[in-house]
Image (cartoon, rainbow, N blue to C red):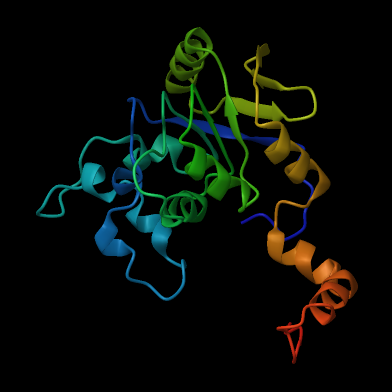
Length: 207
């Protein structure tokens, strides 16, 4: 997990590839695992229904492959994270170990939920994602580096253009992606605004 309020300008780690367009949030984390009080432990259920059959037998999936056990940069295709807006999807990925997601495109709400966890979602071209996926699958130990400031992604000495939503990028780089921390840091301004509202009679900030 990214520390609350931490500035995120670069992310480095080994990659893992999950191929396919329109992978929705129900495939990322099946709905039956959302009946939890906290998000702790969700990582083991990431992609559960495509990692195991109904009898619990292991299927062929990158998240089951020991070569990618410590990977932290997920490579995907088009419209990743579509479907329901469940924040459990990025929570499950983060708790599995993912710290950044690289793809051709993302569902807007999924990208926003990732940003709220300090996880960049960056886009590359269709041609680039094809090359990157091939490189990662051929060399699981390759180091991937995403630089939000320069808008680049580097692997095996090759650099690709990697775009990101400007608002999300600015929030990550400034450390303001965590809305809870931002609110706590601005308590005086919040208190002043609240005191001016006629319908707020007993304002208190709880830590």
